[in-house]
Amino acid sequence: MEETDAMPSRGSIVTVLVSALVTGLLVYIYRRIILRQIRRSIWRTAGEDVVLVHCPTPGFLTPNISPFVMKLLTYLRLAQIPYKLEHDEPMGAKGKTPWITLNGKDLHDSQLIIEALAKKFDKNFGKGLSEEEKAIARGFTMMIEEHIAWGLRVWRFIVDDGRTLMEGMKQPFYVWLIKPIFVRSQKAALWYQGLGRHTPAEVQDMMTADLRALSKYLGRKSYLMGDSLTEVDCTMFAFLANILYNYNRSPYYDIIKGELTNLYHYVIRVKRRLWPDWDQCLEKTKYK
Ligand SMILES: N[C@@H](CCC(=O)N[C@@H](CS)C(=O)NCC(=O)O)C(=O)O
Image (tube, rainbow, N blue to C red; front, side):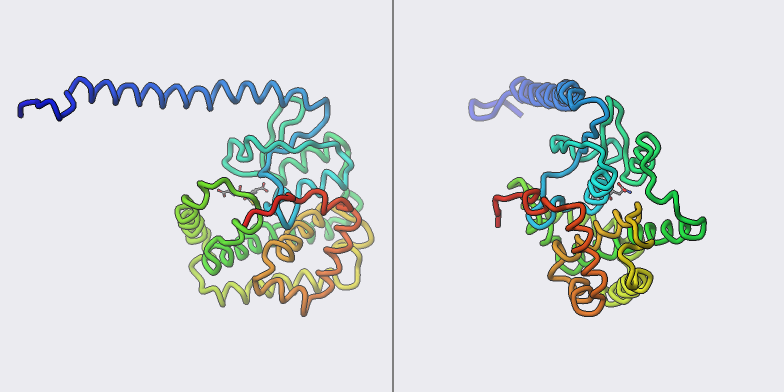
């Protein structure tokens, strides 16, 4: 075919493509290498033994919309370990939040982080428990993080189409555009995890049974394992507070407020003790 004046020449198409490729490469190098190095040198100034918590920006309804971030922050407060929040890179090398930088070293996964901090700062709150109690605490921790967490995602993404994500924290404008893709990826994750294969009613029954088990074991005690707060309370508080504030349109809110009221009072108790500044920690500018 002959080239006419109206058609771009093959040479100019190649130039545009090469320029786009080079620009993309430069942006990638800048973001992945240079910007990261700049941030790292800033993070190093956080201070010795100060935990830099990488996490999303504060929520409107809870200090952080991620219960795993809330679990870690609650532990840091319980252990009185100084920390700072950092929001430029909320997702770590494992693609999850939270992660931390401590004295220039990165650590990932709230549980592994807490275990490492407990060792470093000698802040193991469960060490006085009997072996049997430790096993129970571990079982409840896993039930909450590996079952209740997924059940909540079923409600958020399958029943409620991800709306609470928008209601719970300030989101950049483009999140509205990519929300359907994100919701679809979460539904796929739920399918592979397994809970997404059940009907929402079946999941609700399972979740109710889990919450009843927590309520039964808590009974009249102040904290899950007795009179003192231990690590399992950081998980339990984080997820129950998440239900009460971020899932307040879900059936789980009604179950806790209406039937399992010892769980509700438990949240208030831990919140008063470890989060007296809760309201000051919320993102103030409402964005709806
Ligand atoms: N086991 C991890 C779980 C962390 C986690 O699942 N965080 C969520 C936010 S609440 C996340 O990063 N989700 C992003 C994703 O799964 O793609 C931990 O304890 O830190």
